[in-house]
Length: 213
Image 1 (tube, rainbow, N blue to C red):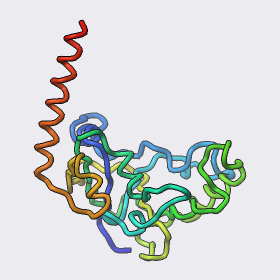
Image 2: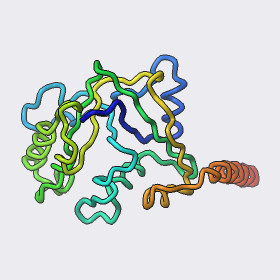
Image 3: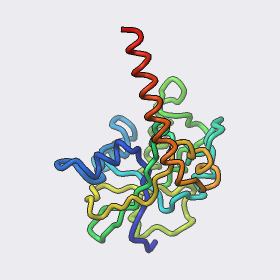
């Protein structure tokens, strides 16, 4: 697939750290692609840190896909991990270069009918290992990925992306997230309203604490 960028959702606090931390700035591969202990004798790279992203802002494969008994889409779950109450959720656009180790994996392998999450109380260990093996086998370089060939294509970047190649593509107001998740639309003016609401909430909390002292 020919593309020179991918998208990554994050919280406002995490975005500040990405852009302002002088020693550990940039988009860094911190979370392991596959946790240690999962999979059958997978190579070290399978358990190394990765940046997780998407090929598009709101991929249909995420917005229209539901897992198990969940009533929310996979896209909603991605946003849930990035959001904070009334603070904007940040969508970063990461520019990639040929030297980057950017791949695509099929998250859709997790739809194995016997897999219900990695908790061994609900999924036997050998099932989790089978699914994670398939997850690793699905990894292909981004340049070799054929659009539409994976059920849920997920960008996996195994190296850091420096600040110089990151763009704040969107800042989605916290109060507008449900609408954005559902339709892709939001009111930018809500950023100011949400900020004022956070200030007022802080003032109320301060007054409450003062009254109790």
